[in-house]
Image 1 (cartoon, rainbow, N blue to C red):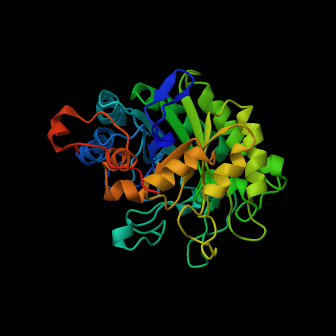
Image 2 (image 1 turned 90 degrees about the vertical axis):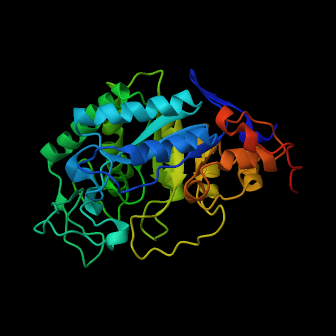
Length: 362
């Protein structure tokens, strides 16, 4: 059996393979509500054979959205459609997860196809963003409001309530989005965190916000369910968050009951020079995995043999696919064929199944 198709059991939840659908923003919601687009988008990846499917970044508050089109979980009314989606995912053999996010200083932006620019807080449809410090993402953008203690407590409460809604909606995995320059990452990185109180300065202070969020979420999230954290393992910028910081954080998160760290990078420095190439972030999942915690690898992973080798060589426990899954919702079925492995197809599609596995490449 290819390593990519070996089941992975974490606690009492078993993933049928090591292929995960990475969170990918669709910018197709109104007031945070999921709709039929999300049902078809996520549901087709379950039919396509992925083991784990995580929703796009799902905002815990209206002001925590990246754009007005973001998915949200800040109203009880959001639960009904999300529950339909998780039910479909589980009925087709995959596990449903939700990525909870607060966009911080990167909130209040246009959808990408509208240009992606910041919507000024005084402009129609815009709102004032918040962050650890009043430092804008770029010089051309409006500075965020630095969170005071009451603001921090509100964000923690928003994450806690959102986690409770996620449970009611049927999700089995929560991933806290601590990457890509959003609020949690902004607290972690000394580039965006200039605070002088207990949430800024030292490594221990800068990780405090994340640890307190985790504690709040765990008050309502059952221990039998899974809790992941996505991190940007490097800012790719001198003076920023580093791979060594990520390993040190992983040691702490492992002892806080985190089940897996999803290792991405970048997103907090607009001008960062990132050496993008096939599998360029796998080095981070490999480094973090040395702590003994499970990890996920992401970033220009596009070929079945490439994905299989990541698992086989112990560089990660799960492979997260994003753009490749947008191109091919049935990547797992194709990967099984190319790796010479027999998998069960949906009965509705069996007549299209390749008659014999293709001999593995390489």
